[in-house]
Every structure is written in structure tokens, then in C-alpha cells.
Length: 165
Image 1 (cartoon, rainbow, N blue to C red):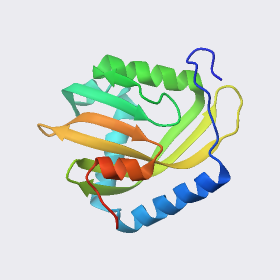
Image 2: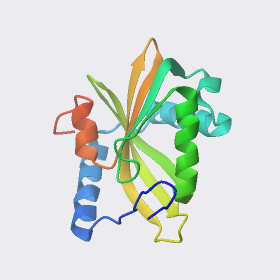
Image 3: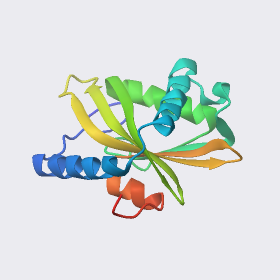
Image 4: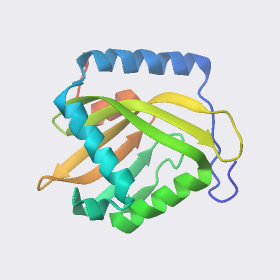
């Protein structure tokens, strides 16, 4: 458990990990991997480059980041300051963290970027490489809400995407 955040990192049980991989593979069969994926990768590169989403001009003034993941679950971060606070908390929990977009699926409630989350806990725990999803919602052509999910099916359902993916 991280003493600063009170977050305990759990590795996913083998059965759950296999189920998650099956969900990921099924969703990736329907995901766009061309121009939409490249656009998503550029967005993530801008965030990493600036460290402040407001500086990139990609986010709406009422931007929110929501975590529905195994770490920081239920947390909400508002505005550019909230995003910076989230990054600081991630750096406390993880020595290294990277989300690698691999596909995009569009739905009535936004779009979902499917990818791999690779993390190395700061406390020296086991490195993790798991499927992960980000749901993007836009307003006035800008990102207004970004929700991070460990549960791929929930991410897709929340974006209005129903099976078969």
C-alpha cells in the first residue's frame, strides 16, 4: 500500500487477466487502427509534452478526469490543476507508467481508446502490462471528460458501444 495515497495495487487474478485479454482482443477486432488511432496518439503525445492539458488547447474549460480503475478509483480531477494533481499522484504510486493506444471505437457517448497500460510500482512491486481503456467525451470540439477504466466492457458500455464490438 502506498502510504501517501492509501492505494493498494493489486495484480489481477489469472482468470480475470485472461478474461480481460479476451475482451481486449474482441474489441480490437472492431477498433479503428488507422487515422483515428494516429490522431489519438497525437493527443496523448501533446499531453505528455506539455504536462498541462490546458496548454495544448485540446481540452474544454470544464475538463474533468475520472478514474474507474484499480488505482485511484472513484477519484475526479477538475481542470488543468486537477490533471496536474492526478499526474503527481500517479508519480507517487508508479515509478513508471505509460498508456499505449492501440485502437479506437466510436459510440453515441463518446469514443474509447483501447490500449495497454504498463506500470512499475514505486514501492518495487511487480510490473504490470494490462489492457486498459480511456473514454473521451467532447464538447465544442474539445475534450471535456476523460474517464480511465480497468473494466473494458464498462468503458464500451458507458460510451454507448454494445457488443459485438
